Length: 121
Image (cartoon, rainbow, N blue to C red; front, side):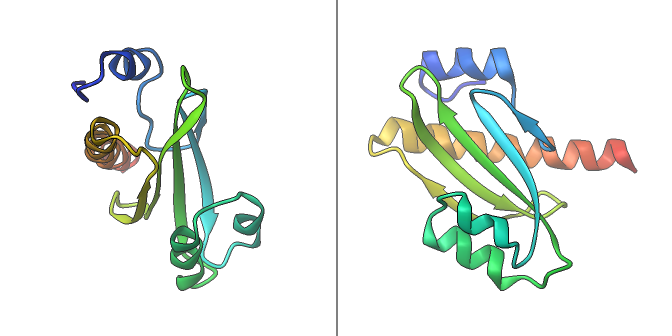
């Protein structure tokens, strides 16, 4: 993976990008449904909460949160459906390099979700 940041590339090589349930120092993926009350306790950005509350209670969603472990800070947050479509995204990096790396991770995340969808079918 080529995000433009060697240290972040090393983290991705070590942990990978998963499309389903995972929890490691780089990525946390949580299954949720629309209007999920647990989203309020997760300290999520307002736009992410709005996207979760926009969907009906039976709609399955995936919440992906990415971190920069060596800096101990948040990198990005994505809400996706089970087909791999990104419904909402937030990039936390204030530096252009981290913003571009978040875009690369978003594309890889969509590919990973769709790949797992094909394997499940």
